[in-house]
Length: 444
Image (cartoon, rainbow, N blue to C red; front, side, top):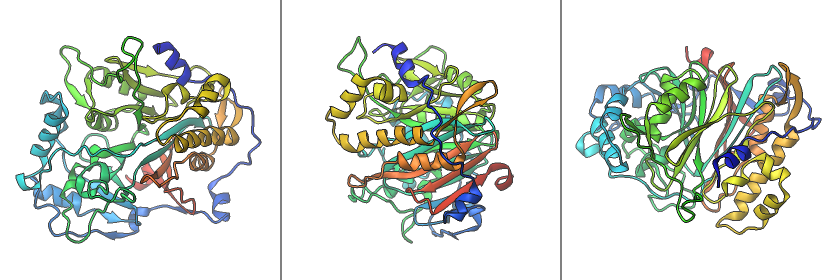
């Protein structure tokens, strides 16, 4: 498949007419019974474990970080991360494969008895989804569902590694200790952060399990699994995931995601930084791409194709709505193909893939929810797709992956407003309990 076609499919220049939805603000939402929770850091209880820092090399710093862990709800934890993860040591180490990167992280952060063998437990099919729209002020909104194999959310405020940033992380992707599949609990797979006996020291590696987040300048991003598919020249092979250019250091995807938030203020700075490194996927079977949005209203998708970085930005009046999965062909992930290409739509709905029903249905739900919620308004000299933050969150719920028979579900949903530096999010499609973060007010 040619690159130009893929770019055209991803960025759809489709104008959805005003669907006539009523506007919904936070006050109106509260009147309907939904609860907006602010200052959540004051909620919950500390999670105590006497062995949590004893297996870390910098025990004093690790103790400060790990002792800040609070359990907000059954699936929601919070932690203030103040430990230097020595990113430059990883960048300059010259590590060019999964094993050597993993060994380097273990050697930097843990004592011998605290280290863990390479953990790359295969998860069931996942299918994260996201979109970009605007609010009535013309500020860009970035909506994102994280769908994965069970597990809780550990929200981290990271203040020791560059710009201060918030990280939404999945502990069960970090260590076998917190992974239900590794423990043989393949259906529920919820993981546990503390049972009163298990050490919490592996959470020191938690920033490397970041899935999305925002920094103090309003730059936000989400990581999405990129479907594996063949090229015209290599029809039987998957996409290449490594870039090799002379004179550039290698940076793995989990580290790159941290660098995006701890060193960049804008999408353009993200592009400049990423072009200065070679990219290495830490998971040989999974490639990733990122959606990035900033406080200026710029947004783009960054991904690697045949060893080169591509930055896909929208044309005028365009926006993004897509779902990513190993099992959903890439060309069916855009609004344009879903609504405007009957042949592709028919093929999409008829083809049989593993777990195909759930993926097809959820992609359709996201597209339909987007079209039903969005209003087209003329803002700043151009027509833009408009929703409120609450409508965007409702849209994510309609497009969520709520089928848990394979141990999968939407773990969390977020709506980022980079200009205001706010985040609206909920857990497991529970609209009765919605959390709101104001970065400037809550994390001065």
